[in-house]
Amino acid sequence: MFEKQSSAYCALFVDDYAAFIVSVERRNSGRGSDWNGYARKNGTPVRAGDEGFVWDRGAGAVFLCERPDLPRGPALPPSQKYVELELSADRAPRTPRSREILTSLLQRYAEFARRALKCRNT
Image (cartoon, rainbow, N blue to C red; front, top):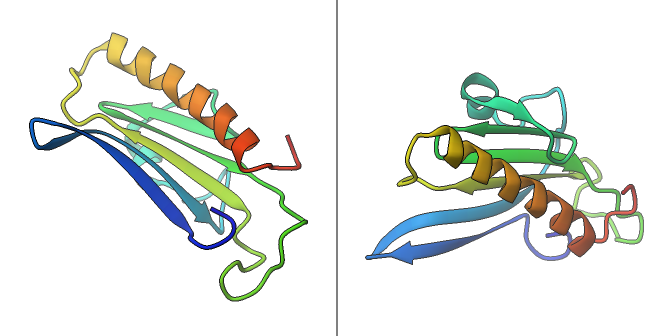
């Protein structure tokens, strides 16, 4: 995420359909900004990263990830120090239980991502 590319995703296919998608993206903005307009409009706040939301069939979070050890340049501008995570489960039932599961997965994903990306501000 902080060396060669600004985003990545992984999709789990079931019967030729992307049933579950996990994504990560570097961002210029973080908490209290428009990092994910859909989440702000349709989501319910949850504790994940610096700011997280869960909505029907999805969840997202953003957090600051300081990496002073990395050289900054055109491929990694100084402004891109936030990370946005998103989970999408388009065929999940629209139930409170689905939201609970997505919230738990998002919290785990945020904790894992901070460690894996070696964020210094954790």
